[in-house]
Image (cartoon, rainbow, N blue to C red; front, side):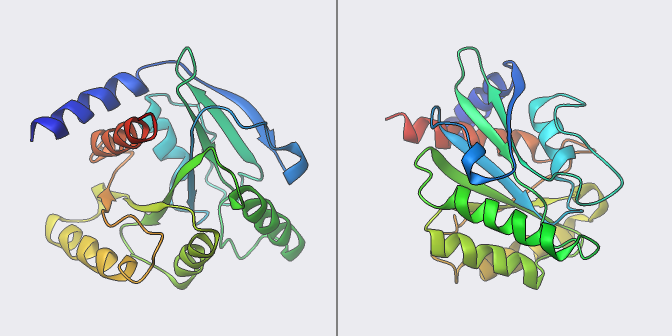
Length: 215
C-alpha cells in the first residue's frame, strides 16, 4: 500500500513539471534521435487519446482535440520535465474508415518503423473505449506490438460513461483477452479525462515504469 502511495505521489510530481511539444514526424526519416525514455499512446481514432493526454499532463491544449476523428496524422513528441525526464509520443489514431487508404498505409508504415528497434520506447499505452471494449482492430494492434516485442498496457477510457458494475466486467473481459498476448502488461487501468478517474493511477504506473528503467 505504501509503495503504491509513493508512486502516486511520484506520478503527481512528474506530471506537474513542464511539458511541451518538441517534434513531429510523418515518416521514419523524421524521427528524432534517441534520448530520454519514451512512452507512446495508441488507440482508435475516436477513443479520446488527445483528451487523455491533456488530462494526464494537466493541460487543456497540449494535444489537439477535435470532433473529427483521424486528425493526428504524425507521431507527435512531447518533452516532460526540466531537465527532460520522459518523452510522450502521440501516435496516429487507427481504424478511422473515412480516411483514405493511401493515408492509412502511410500511418501504418510510420507506426511500424517507430516500433521496430526503438530502444528508448519503454511501453505503449493502448487506449480502448471503455463503453464498448475491445474491437477486432484493437486486437490487430496487440498483434503488431507482440510481433515487435514492444511492451504495452491497455488503458480503458470514458469511465464517466460506464457504471461501476459494467466497469468491473469490462476490466475482467480485457484482462482475459490480453492474457493471450505475450507483450501485454497484465494490468488494466480505467480512466476518464472528463472526471479525472484513473488519471492518478496512470501517472503512478508511468512513474513506476520510469523508476524501473532508471535502475
